[in-house]
Amino acid sequence: MTNLQLHERLKFDTSQGQVLDANRRYLLMRADVLMGMFASMTPQAREQALEALTHSVFTHASDSVRAYADPADPASLGLFEAVALGAASLGWGVWQFDLGEGSCRLTVRNSPFATAFRTVQAPACAPIVGMVQAVCTHVWKQDCVAMEVECSACTSGEHAPHEGLCRFEAFVR
Image (tube, rainbow, N blue to C red; front, top):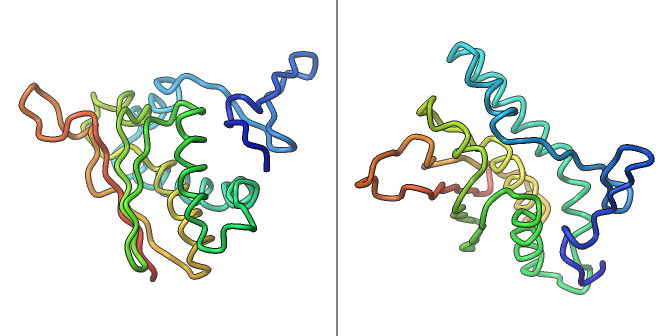
């Protein structure tokens, strides 16, 4: 793996209408456009769609996780940093991991999903949940569960305790 950050590796191939990191194709889309789709759904349909998005990110992010992993780092501690830097490169907010024995906590500042979903006042960061699950499953080599425990889309006002922060947890199943 190169030392370049993800945004430095992205190739904007306008002749083919694609954005690539090696053979992984990325899509640039406004967060409000994506999250607006969920906002227009009934609460039950929205919950199902967000669960499907979590599963899709978990499934397909595994390729990115393998690409970021450094075989010379058997504990995979560098992978968490690489994923955090990649998230920032893609506009997914600023990620800070806190690792424990078979557990992981993630704090995300400025999640684009939560920011675009504030009018709904419901948890919004399904893509981040899927990515955290993919990273932890890869590192721990066991099935894990990831969940959003606090979403800034659900907090508003000048006195909200953690406005702008979303919190996630993952642990071995």
